[in-house]
Image 1 (cartoon, one colour):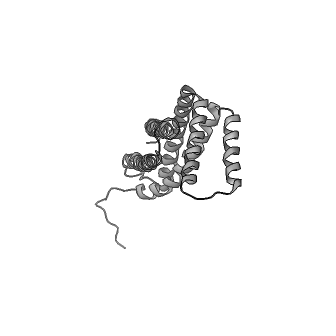
Image 2 (cartoon, rainbow, N blue to C red):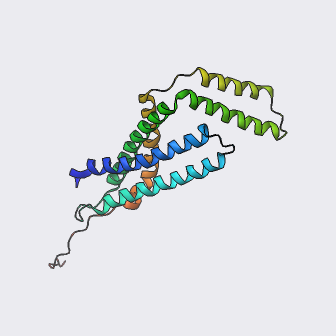
Image 3 (spheres, rainbow, N blue to C red):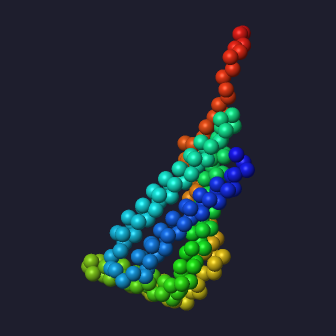
Length: 197
């Protein structure tokens, strides 16, 4: 079983990363780059759906791994946790690479301008609601927009490391629960000889 650990982890990590990468690209496009107003609700629904899909797929992949373990070895809690964590980390690498390629194709400047227009949209919603914000908030919004405009595009390594950290932490937290659910005790064949005491 140990021989195909890396093969399984790579295969399912790549699949999970592809799905989560497409989800992140869709979220980024809808939130920052589309011309539609008020996409916050769609973003929340899509984000919740991606969280559920991530947990469900990670559970399915770990359970498949647990069921393929030989009966006499079982599938320990540590095996489940390490497998879930490794699949999550590999998915994070794929998501980081996909996201970097997407932002490179779209252009970092377009991404920043989309982010700034989102800040302006939320500020307009607050201002139109009749709530009077202190002048400090207006300065804060302007400072954030200024920092975004002056910032440099993150490198491939930055995107990769950030995504890896997010998925490693998420995989650890979710993996703690999944490992407890998928663990199996070793099953030894029953022998016909019984020992009398």
